[in-house]
Image (tube, rainbow, N blue to C red; front, side, top):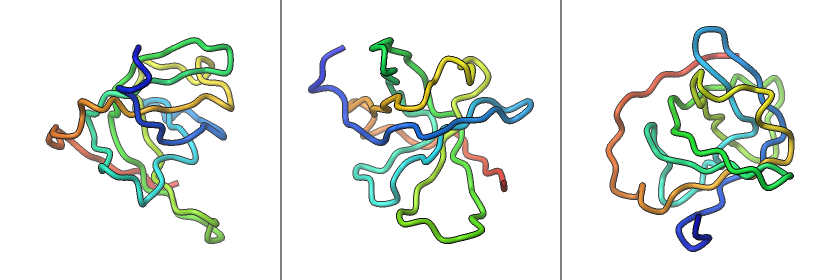
Length: 112
């Protein structure tokens, strides 16, 4: 993994499992992220213990906040292949730079 190929997106504050969908990472992609992050993009997760997990974004999630947060972010779902237990708080999420020209392959939302 070459650091110059990775763009930091966010640090995981929490995650949860959606039945039949997969693991969702919170807070998610900051709304102002450039280039835009899309479904199907490859990401690298680096845990506090420096374990690297390669994954693809399966969906972007819609969150209905009870109170407006300081920063608006879009949680991402990694699908069923990544377990909640594999991603501790403090895990850093990086976008693979080679994703910039990929098209959206599918997208779904989930209200929470």
